[in-house]
Length: 514
Image (cartoon, rainbow, N blue to C red; front, side, top):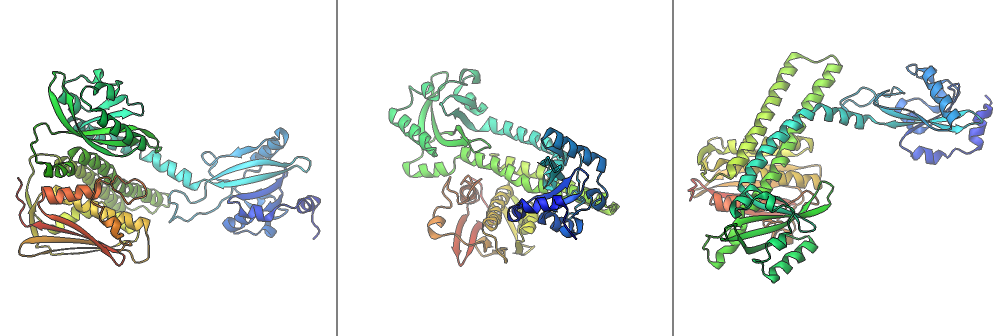
């Protein structure tokens, strides 16, 4: 059959098939009577209709859901004004009924679309419809809206935790001009100053009488290089009393990874009378650094439970839409959400207890320790196809500081999961076992996530050393070693070979808290 003149026009003007085929959008060329003159490969794939089958047909006859009057009006407006008109996913939802994979996109049955009606040829009265898939964006926005209340509740809990930290951690924050922007209550209480008298003052000016020139130059050098620095100095209280502070200068970044200043964590060592050889031990036990890492871990440990809650809600919504929602599923989902929220609360208590001076010894089965430790990570292991194997005798008991040991194991397991994320492969496996000897109880955690080079392995327990490409503070294993060796009186070592990394924890059967 002979081509129409308009069709010949399109072919003669050489519509760039290769260019259009490479665009990840649907493209249809129509006239103002809605006849189709071009239908690209993207649409053939997504609608399962061939171009030859739709050419010269009216689009509202091919897709009967389309309101022809509305589309004609938008086409005439676009041609008359010589400017695009639009359908948006938030209002129209979709123009072409393209089904989507329910396993991948949980919220909708059909692809949500933004559609631009663009003037193509005013004389021939042709327009191009550009169809963009907005399903993921729309689905994400809906999920975010449904979880606003949960995020607000969690933020309230974090605010309470910050208040606790504010009372205990000696810290101040300075901006890039060295102006003090924030101090903790612990800092102002220690020095006896009102916060208002310190904020917006130059840090070096306030410390000018007690800070040696060499120390000031060293701090400023690390500021320029945005590096961590540990230093010891004397500060004066409001009453003129000298306070010796062991401080850690840490660069601070905002959520956009822009450098905004520094945080100075401090420890009051005025009354500490330790020998020179014990000073490094003091640094490893810097509670300020540990507290900073713990706050990061709280947010880190909450991500997965929130993901579990989101998944349950999404599943309920899908089954509701498909009218297959059953009462037993609703009940089990409510129970799972309640269990997850309870665990979030327990996590807060665990972190709070870590900083209590009156440590509580508990005699507990070792398998319970691991149950508490891997509960947060179980879903993440399933998502990333990590096989988790556990070999622990249910009769094996240990007397220890439970919260400290649980936090250590969580951190080590999370490191393994993160290693699999960065180095995924087909046979991902995480193995845990614990056994008893005459003198101690041993825990072994092994992953096959690629191993750690020897030169890196020697540094993994150093503070602020991180192998992670991003979101790594470098304090995780440092804190773990501090907990095991200083709090639990045990030993923590790590070995790596043949693409495997094994962490070994050796603990006394009964911890004696000094």
